[in-house]
Length: 297
Ligand SMILES: Cc1cc2nc3c(=O)[nH]c(=O)nc-3n(C[C@H](O)[C@H](O)[C@H](O)COP(=O)(O)OP(=O)(O)OC[C@H]3O[C@@H](n4cnc5c(N)ncnc54)[C@H](O)[C@@H]3O)c2cc1C
Image 1 (cartoon, helix red, strand yellow):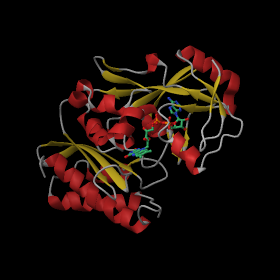
Image 2 (tube, protein in one colour):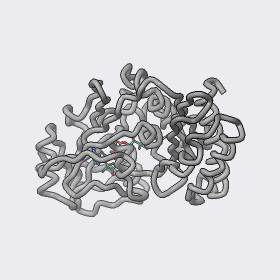
Image 3 (cartoon, rainbow, N blue to C red):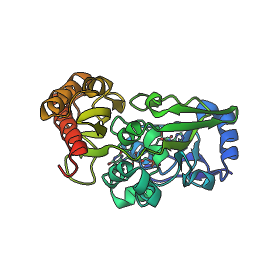
C-alpha cells in the first residue's frame, strides 16, 4: 500500500502502512537502509518539525497498524510485550502492575496521557535516547528483545541493544517485535526515581531503577540502572559489585552510591550540567537503595 503524507511543517514523503508483520519485513528487505520506521511518531514527528531529522526521499513504513505486534501476555516464565503496544496500555495492564510494577511506575512518569496513548514501548527503546524512561526498569528486570527480519530472528539481552545516542544493534531490514521480561521471583524490593525539571510532562535529567534483595541483613542481590547519565541507558555494574555481599548499613549504602559517580559519564545539555547529573546520580541511587531496603522511605 502506498500513499502520501504532507503538511506545512512535515515534508511530503512516501508512506507505507502494512497491516501484517511479514508484509512489513518484506517491504523492509526491499527498501533496506532507504526507509525509516515509525510507530507512534512521538519522537519522530517532533524531530521532523524541529528539522533535526530529514529523510530526503526515504520512504516511511508505519508499524502502528500491525495488530499482531500489539499485546501483553503472561507465560509461565516470562511476560511478552508486542513492540507497538502503547505506553498507556502497559501502564494500565494488570499483568504489568502485578509482575513488573517498577515498569508501570516508570510509565506513569512519562510524558502526558496523550503522549502515552500515542507512544509505543518499541519506539521508546528504538529511539535509543539515553533518557528513555522504560530502559532503566527493563534493564534491572533483565529484559530481552526479539528482533526479526525476513532472514530470521534473534533474541538479545536489552543491555546489548543500545550502542549510543540514537543508535541500536538493529541491522538494516530488522524490526524490534517483542520485549520479553523474565517474571521476577517474589523477593527483593524495587524502586524507580526520576528527576526532571517539573514533576510531570518532562524528560529525565536523570532516572534510577533499583532492585535489592536482602537476606540475614546482607545484600544478597542488587541491580541498578540509570538513564540520562551516559551515551546509553546503563547498568551500574561497578556499584552493584561493590555493594553485593556487604552488610546492610547506612554507611554501605552511602559509600556504594558514591561508586555510581565514578561510573556515570554524563554530558551537559539544556536540561542540566554534567556535574549536577553526577551529584544527583549519587543522591538518587542512595535514595533508591534505601527505599528498596526500607519500603516507604
Ligand atoms: C511532549 C513529549 C513528552 C515526552 N516525554 C517522555 C518521557 O517523559 N520519557 C520518555 O522516555 N520519552 C518521552 N517522550 C518521547 C516519546 O514519547 C517516547 O520515546 C515514545 O515511547 C516513542 O514511541 P513512538 O512509538 O512514538 O516512537 P516513534 O517516534 O514512532 O519512533 C521512534 C524511533 O524508533 C524507531 N522505531 C519505532 N518502533 C520500532 C520498532 N518496532 N522496530 C524498530 N524501530 C522502531 C523509529 O524508526 C524511530 O527512530 C516524549 C515525547 C514528547 C513529544
